[in-house]
Image (cartoon, rainbow over all chains, first blue to last red; front, side, top):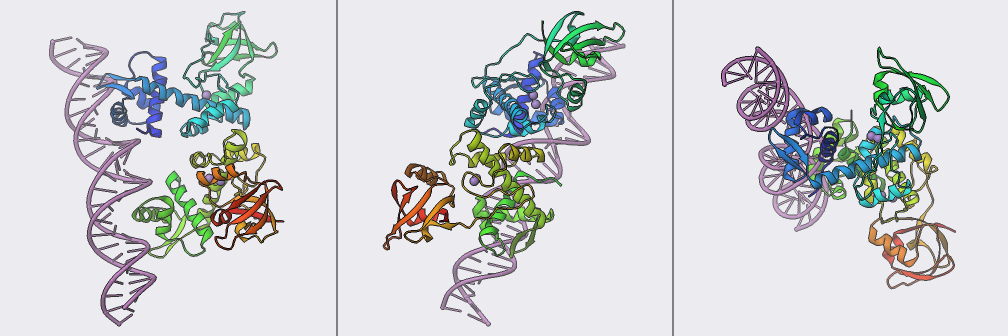
Length: 220
Length: 220
DNA sequence: TAAAATATTTAGACTAACCTAAAAATAATT
DNA sequence: AATTATTTTTAGGTTAGTCTAAATATTTTA
Ligand SMILES: [Mn+2]
Ligand SMILES: [Mn+2]
Ligand SMILES: [Mn+2]
Ligand SMILES: [Mn+2]
């Protein structure tokens, strides 16, 4: 029972949607995430159910089975490990690696990913701060919070970004915001919920509410 | 004008067949190399001709165009660079890397392969001794000869293998034959053309004619 | 709770990449 | 040169993965 690239991508999409909202995953959410027609999704859901990778009830949405979950987790592990490789070893910027990792994640070979993991020193987070499940599929959790929820006077270390799109990441580069920096929230403007922050005790910048909502920090 | 994985594989097969025999490449040779029905090859040849990647004359065989040659060369470059990565960085054995490289060679992204090349230090040969074309598609040639052609008393440095199959490579490992070793031809048995060789001034082994034909050395 | 709006599935079609069997072209042999 | 053998192409079919348009089911709203 071999699994195709398209099937893998659907499993990953379902996993990620289920991660956010905890109801059953609906056809249209998948279609939106995959940029395909809803009819194509229905087709694929039938195939995945056939292979026992999802539990599918017509009109009611889907859920990953144990095996579907396992495969999706492996795929995410591969994607994120390749992203680490591209940034740490090949010197790509964090906004350049996603599309390459989308391809690399589908390369088959168990030994490959474990050796890569070893070569990289078993990283637990990818270049965007997302956790990398280990070889047994176990996740590392962190208690992070959006910058938009910090109170004036509170500090945090930047540990992740919610939006992975190139323009956002390049904007962050431009204003000196990168993973690992310390953010001190100086002031919030009531009118538009924008915030003034100090970066690593040095420069000060103003972040719109939208930006602040897309940055994760660990408090303190 | 996008190119598919299947198309890339056909271009590479055509390139490699043309490399050996210098007549036009015939449908059946491609079918044999690709393990497909001749009818499937004909289908693909039409598509490749449509895209101006080959010159195709019905019943007469095919030839790569300038562009087809360029793409095949890039594909071989990618395959061999990935093989170097797998062996040098991830610690795979030389008999384990081909199938992985078959997948990795199809990952799209110009920057990727040039960065990988740089990361690896611009290697000119892959783990099997095959030349890696540079970013401009230029090849490094070496004056190598099969061990089966050495005269008794002649020495050579092992620079390549003609057969890349796992059992052959593992056999070489077992008898202590690896790229870079010095081979001194001690004696040839007329009856079966097998040869007695000394490896790097130390051990002596007997190689069958078949094995000797699959080993390339640079004389001296 | 019936009508309207929305979400989902079905029906029917398309393309790439394969296949087998039959037809046609080319090459080899008498 | 005619027959036979081999090679190649054509004809017709399959599967995965996509699409649009139409039908149907579910949810929302009046
Ligand atoms: Mn990514
Ligand atoms: Mn990432
Ligand atoms: Mn290879
Ligand atoms: Mn090789």
